[in-house]
Amino acid sequence: MTAALSLVDVACTFVSRDAPGQRYTAVRDVTLTVGAGEFVSVVGPTGCGKSTLLNIAAGLLAPSSGTVEVFGQPLAGINTRAGYMFQGESLMPWRTALQNVRAGFEFRGVALDDATAQAGEWLKRVGLGGFGDRYPHQLSGGMRKRTSLAQTLALDPDIILMDEPFSALDIQTRQLMENEVLELWASKKKAVLFITHDLDEAIAMSDRVVVLSAGPGSHPIGEFAIDLARPRDVAEVKTAPRFVELHAAIWAVLREEVLTGYRQQLAA
Amino acid sequence: MKPPSNLRLRLFQLGVLVAVFGVWYMLTTPGLIPNFMFDNDRQAAFFFGEPVKIFGRIWSWFFVNADIYRHLAVTLLETALAFVIGTALGLGFGLWLALSPMAAAILDPYIKALNSMPRVILAPIFAVWFGLGVASKVALGVTLVFFIVFFNVYQGVKEVSPVVLANARMLGANRRQLLRHVYLPSATSWVFSSLHTSVGLAFVGAVVGEYLGSSQGVGYLILQAEGAFDINTVMAGILVLTAFALGLDALVSVAEKRLMKWRPTAGESEKL
Image (cartoon, rainbow over all chains, first blue to last red; front, side):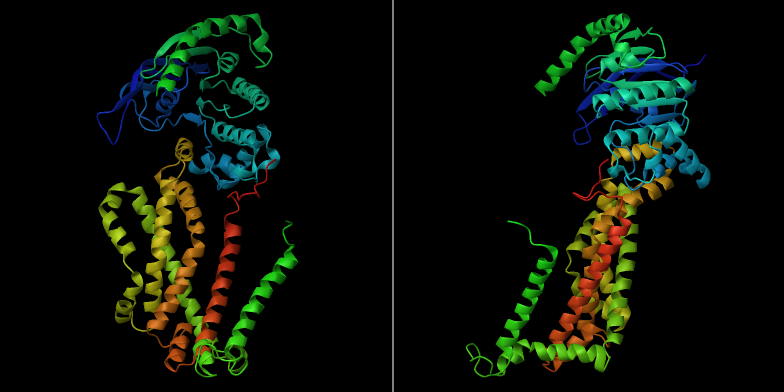
């Protein structure tokens, strides 16, 4: 079976526009595959190029070298089979929640009635049925994330890319949303590439966790299959003995990188 | 200190207005108080006008002779045309240059030069090109409005959140859809933030243009009165222009409120 997403020997080097001599290699030697229906998390210290990796997978950024394949096809331009949930505020502030969710349908030329109906359906599914006419600034942070989730999932992408989507949320909202995402994922079984710096979140949600080294030139240094039974509740699963074991094993690898990353940040 | 209530605030504001006109009346009415600046009684009235006569003038303009409407209509038409054409051109050029860095880089020094030029001085040239009618005033107003809108649109497009942009692209927006659904709304919000300035400048363009040479309009009335040393009519014209500028500004505020309801305003943003 071909992988939903496969990155082979990908490297990405940024060149400073003002001083072409200054280069920064964010990631190198990255080989990463996500199978169809597989939930893969990438963890790593801050500033290790996790978002770079996701932007490459999304086609927003072309890798300096290496190949990206989507369902066996080399990727050129935007990855049209992927949906991307960004870390920052990605909703269009001049559109209401409903219009935001509807945007993807509009861009694809779906008739407006149909698009509105489907968008309304999705808003209900993420628990925002009554909030369609609100503008993003009238919604709380958690509600905006739910809207983003509906916006991304409504288009039914085969690959879902998530960049620390819940990092700005408080812990309760976060666990609620993690469970919701798992539920939605379980019903559709899409390929997910999930980026986070939170190891608990990564283990609780994923089939596989990939550990990235500290930058510059981050690359995968460990891969762990998460053999916890599904369906999982992200809060409850954290007390399972197997969870604790996995956490200890991954943390042993991750710890050194986190410290390296921290030292680099202090030095900079 | 407790902030004054709305009614009291209005009363105080009205008080200031009454006081200003009261002092003006006292200082200019011949024979009311002894001279301390001028040699004779009538000079203060000659230089500064008399409020009562000024209001009489305005009254007859609007209600007795009813001859100002034609001039006001011309001035407002010039303002509206200058505003619409200037905004459309500014929006178009702003979007174009913001989205094609090459063209922007080439034209950059020229835009800076055109913007630094004191453009009011173009009025005589426009009078030669477009005659003494409405067109030359509109042209002057357009040059004033254009740059305000242009720079705001340019800025607006440059400051589109990269995340919002990337998100729209991931949702499948092509170049045209990005322009329509991301760049344009973002730029429009910047246009609206400059709307008060640009409407004001369109008005300035119309009046200054009329003042420098015309056959109708409120600026023309002022010019005529000035030629006859009729300071009361000049002042009356200025008051009418001020009132209409305030009215236009209020109109802009209403439009802004209706069209920009998606934008959070401090304190009013409603959280759930």
